Length: 192
Image 1 (cartoon, rainbow, N blue to C red):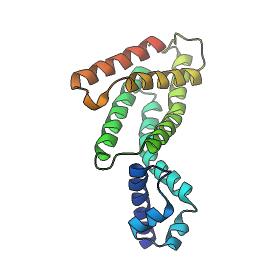
Image 2 (image 1 turned 180 degrees about the vertical axis):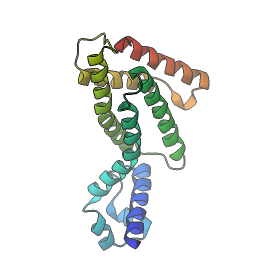
Image 3 (image 1 turned 30 degrees about the vertical axis):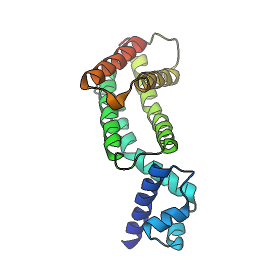
């Protein structure tokens, strides 16, 4: 029981320090000093700074990718309905990260890694759903491309639309307009 508490304390501390300072500026010594955990206990759970960083990232992403997976593997819903649920989950998760990180702003290196890992993890779910939709005729993409390429275009295009907006000062009306733009983009790309 004590082992789990120690490991959890290390992960919580590392999450805080990596978020505040970034990967580069955080060392094992910083994690140990802040947590009060001994060097031996740290190395019992993690072989290096890299391994605890990977564990922090994994923890952040696990629940999110499970929810996304359940949305896209639900073949009882149309692709359109799944895309809508996906964007609702994306918005909810983004709002959650924003509010959680108010107390300590996430360093750019951690934001970038989380972002890229998230995209890498959700890609197969979107690809498989697109492949199913193309095969059953419910999706008629405007591009002559395979499902993997379409998933990349869909994800990166929506990402571009989102990143072009200043969400920090966006009103609810601005957010609704952004959501409509993304929905229109998806419909144009996939013709469903």
